[in-house]
Length: 91
Image (spheres, helix red, strand yellow):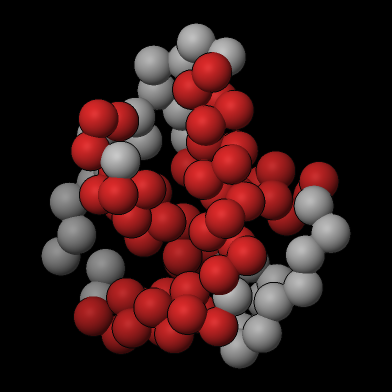
């Protein structure tokens, strides 16, 4: 993933903190259900389809390019759950 994608995510993240709040909430719900691994894509789709959320600064309500960055941010902020989301190496 390019530095440009990361920069776009960061700008979106700063303008839309409610997205990460929901990402964290739904991730902890998945953890409490006993899951050892889960899909950041599934969390994103839950936010997209089951939440009343408005976002700013992007053509899409939730850009799929942002998903890996939210997964990494979660595992960075909650290192005890490192590996909960399977991620690919960034280039």
